[in-house]
Structure formats: structure tokens, C-alpha cells
Length: 213
Image (cartoon, rainbow, N blue to C red; front, top):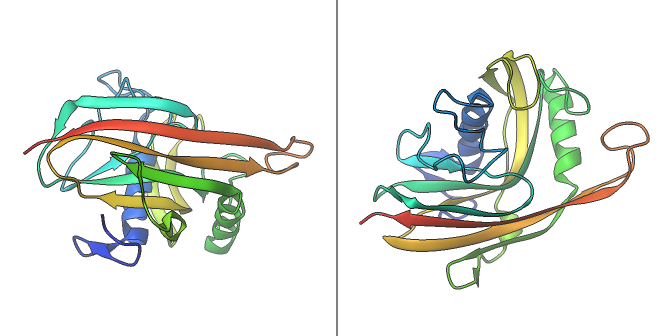
């Protein structure tokens, strides 16, 4: 596991978070292979889909889910960039996540990031990742291209965004692994729109994967 202030392949957590968001926002809602977007379904889409390079990105819906990806053998040497809980604001998002300037995008991302609590992450035999809240990264403003439709709106295009969240870069030995992670998004009244109620969104994901030898 790469420590919070460490690098992997010469890139920091913030740089890998940027790469993750550019990857995720560019994915279609449904792929030509009929795979759903990873934000919407963690079982009908193999973890290998649309992955390149030595780092594979992982994300799952903000819900209570068991994501069984064990049938896919992840090649030895691949790292898994685990996105636990994160948020972005962009020039293509609908309100309340719409903004165009770096400062405004950062302010929105930081506001909703501050709503995240009760963070946890365990690997295999329930071993807690120590000081999990230190695995926090915030991007600089980055450019991305979204298809039409895209995961957050009906119309895509070229946009800019700032993201913030909790991420863990995993390097696991060969064999079967169980990673459980999540937390709670404590939305306050009026966060989503005037009059929107306070609510808690619980995320508790169990990810089952197999690393090759």
C-alpha cells in the first residue's frame, strides 16, 4: 500500500486522483459491450473494463454493495487505485456541483468533501488500514471530456473540474482478497437545493478480487 505522502510510478495521490476522474468522467453511461458505468453498478462491469497501464481504477456506487470481481484475474504487478468516497465539481455538472472557475470548483468540492465521515477500510482478515483519514487528496483544476449523455448529465463535452476524496493505492500479493471500505455522507439541509432535507448516505462496499501470480 502506498502511504498518503508517497508516490507510485512517479505520481502523487492527487495526480492519480486526477487521472481517475478523467477516466471515469469519459466513460459512457453504457459501453458498447453493454457494461454500466462503475458509479452505477459494480458487478455487471468487470474490473478489467477500459483499464490500461499498471494502475487499474476502482469505483463503486455510494451504497451497501458486495462487488464480486473475483472471476477476473488481475495480472501480477497491477496496482488498484481504490476510490473510497469522493466528490467533484465541474463546468458540465448540474447544480449544486456546477462551477467554472478553479476557486469555485474547489469550494464546492471542499464543501461536500467535508460532509464525509465514519470512514473505514479493511483488507482481508478485517485488518484496518491505519489512519485512513490521512489518505485524502485534492486535485488541481483539470480538463476532461464527457460523452453525451454522461454519468452526471444528459449533455457532455469538454469541461474542467476539481475533485477531492479518499483514495488508497493497493499493491496486493497473488491470491484472493476481500477489501471492505466506506463511510457516510452527512448531507445537511439545503445542500442539494433550497429546502432539500438533511440525510445520511451510507456507503459500505465489500470488494472481492483475485490477483494473479
